[in-house]
Image 1 (cartoon, rainbow, N blue to C red):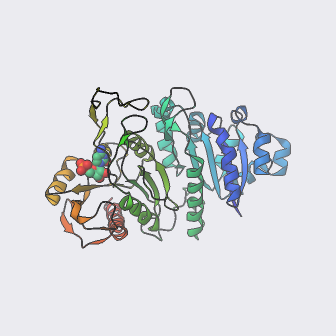
Image 2: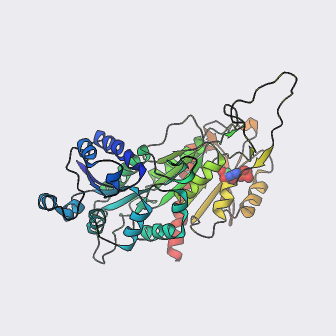
Image 3: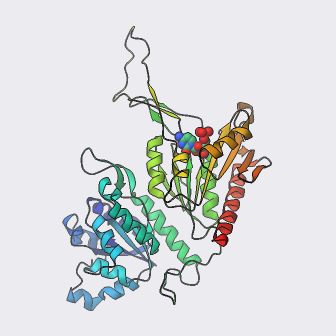
Length: 425
Ligand code: C5P
């Protein structure tokens, strides 16, 4: 039985841990919980203990608890440590290596991988101090999930700071534990030099993070109508699947599609271009980012709050459009945390290669996958694709292939690019 040690921090999202414990139990995980003092202000150890079926550890100096299992055993007898919700304060104490309560002492003593799900007010998340702590923890080998963009518990607050959804956390726990199993050498244990051991690079993208956008975006006109396009998401989803198959950790940010979330892929469903950008930024850093989404170029400046009524003799409403952020350009032009390889798509109906070359330069993208989407090609919504790969070295025209084959070929190239980049360092 796989064991997860869940450290519950003191945020309103703590209540979601009850569902998380239940869902992990359904999937055959044994979950043991540690609660910080602040967490106990939001949910009780009694509730957590009842759902996890285990005694809940709360105090570093709990003599009875120490005799029964002790903080060192708590730290050691687990396959993964999950911190959820991780508050700004808990992240700061982790980054500093403090061990002044049971949660931080366990985090110092563990040799297992650590997955952190932050949750806090957007201003606290974007504060330079918190971002500094996040970068430090990432450098120490800590894995992050979220935070997501959306509404906060506080009325009227929105932004990046919501804890990742329980389903996303469960999927990530499963994929981290699967990675552990893939690595026969005992992934996550300290090596002789004291740094965290990396997985055996058995697959070309093992240990890499690949970020993919997919599908269309929906831009609201009012509460029932929206502007959309014909993208099916098939190519973007195929890229996420191919990256996962090659061993990467994959984050897929998708607009509304009829496709199921791919197995083993952390999928964020969004509606609008603005939401897509926030989710992409929250998923950084990444080694490779592939932007296959057909993002709407414009949105309605002031969408109607309810349904805009068709009044007799009033004529059609005048919709003012404003430009959406260009997600690909925004990420490609970043000066910090820019993915090593940024790949865009260019769907064109004429002068396919010339337009793609222009786009590659103007958006500061490394590679562009260009394809002809004029109606007679049947590419939009279809299973097959004929693409040209535009790189700084030139243009390669690939034969017609299925979208899955295009994805496999592209990701294999990306893996090769990363290996070369590493060798040049
Ligand atoms: O400029 P154009 O829309 O043709 O560029 C296509 C590429 O840019 C695709 O990779 C698409 O995902 C990305 N894009 C984006 N955000 C936009 C528009 C396009 O990420 N607002």
